[in-house]
Image (cartoon, rainbow, N blue to C red; front, top):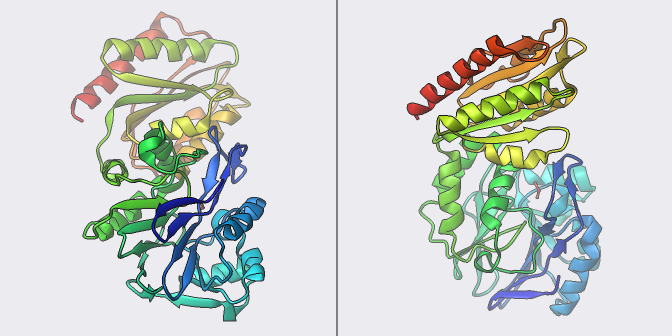
Length: 391
Ligand code: FEO
């Protein structure tokens, strides 16, 4: 991606990864992503804020040439993960005078991951500032968004918050600003679900920490720059709150149609009761979309057949992800069909057992669901509707 000016003395020099479709060999990226790197130039010093994924280091290096950077004084490393820090060795090799500025917790992580020498580092504490000459960087520790070492940088004169993963979105776009880029809200919600939701409590505390700072722009390290930051600040406040909506998410698998029939029947009954439903057929769904829906869904109902006495392996995978993502979902149930027996409820309960979910009586039926089984699904829909009345 070409060099783009954000403000006088502040330019975007990172890379857009249009083709990437998987992150951490786990998270689908239907719209690609970007690795944003920002160049802040003062009268006496120049700082690069984050680098890029090493696969695209050549783009960053070319952009630094295009930006006519002959000397780099500081490289601020907000976060140790390699999509932002992985090009540090190559940038240091090109600009050997540059010092890496990071939190005290980040330094050993960067040294371990990237084999960087001790003398290349300058650690900073919460509230420390770095004067570049007319441009002042203030470092704010924001632990657990989403690693323990994460921090953000506030450019005092321009009131820009460089937030790294915090407020990011996996979105490949050449739009510099969110106001030009459609679909950022959903991409950011999905990103929050996948990356930040397991740490919602810490995210909330970091939001409070930023509350007294006047922020005119938020420049994350994935996705476009928020030129109207209230959009994402208000969204994060809502997502970390305990507010859930009148929605049921149904991740499910069906092998021969019985569980599918129950899922569709339940969907119709919930619809008749005025409840939004999102189905995710796990053998063909994008698990990131399911995660985004779990940011605010009041209820999850898992649908599964029985395979070798257990839930279908894809259901076990989805339940494991739900347990790891820690949504604020309040109610849960299980529906499905079995041939001759099994321990579906026990297995799934063990996987999600640490979540504060209230389990509503599961409906597991032998073979194809008949009238008696469907009556139990009706009762499940009634109970969900009753629970949702109190939201
Ligand atoms: Fe975008 Fe946690 O790295």
